[in-house]
Length: 243
Image 1 (cartoon, rainbow, N blue to C red):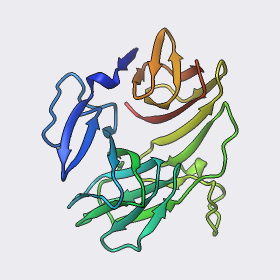
Image 2 (tube, rainbow, N blue to C red; image 1 turned 90 degrees about the horizontal axis):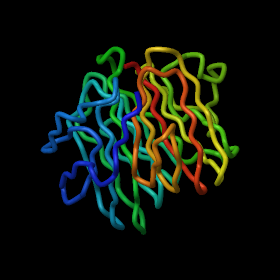
Image 3 (tube, rainbow, N blue to C red; image 1 turned 90 degrees about the vertical axis):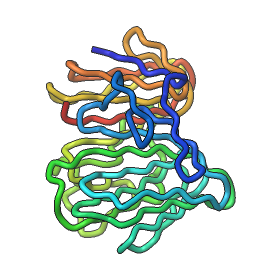
Image 4 (tube, rainbow, N blue to C red; image 1 turned 180 degrees about the vertical axis):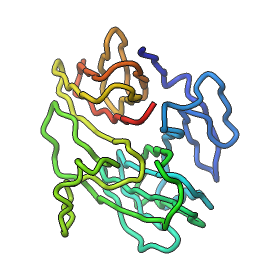
């Protein structure tokens, strides 16, 4: 089954002066038609003006992944050192038994981010944080794993984490990206019984018979693969999670 979610149909929440566009229910936005996609419970997009702060908390029992499309962000999570994200970077927090506050502060220009909240396999434990300030350039036309809860995706459990290795999360899920050139495609294969949620960050693409523009998304269930064909140079993000 393929279900398309148009950008124009997304919910909208004003949170601390930040306008969030919401794919699933969040805060005051309630939509029984779009409850969640498997263990993916929140997908929000937002833009921060220079120096603006977005904060959440206290939060527990969630994996919160923040991916930055444009600009720069400084991260601040209670109990952890701060860090800085560049465009394409990823900030992952396993809130475990509880984190009192999480903050993201824009740099000198606008910062556009996408934030994913996933249910972990086991909601307890000590909180943890992992950051990739940026990832190396990606080979065009293939999906890359940015975050994963699968041990086999860990690159030999290296003592020294490299910028290109995925961050570790506590949900048997993956967050992936792909940069696809116009009139080319990228395919991702998974196992049966999974839920896939793909959002077009920029450009345009088709998935099956569905034509997607920037900001649109598609939920795929009952299939073990997804093929994305780009109509122009396109960047997509994909979540693979238990259905």
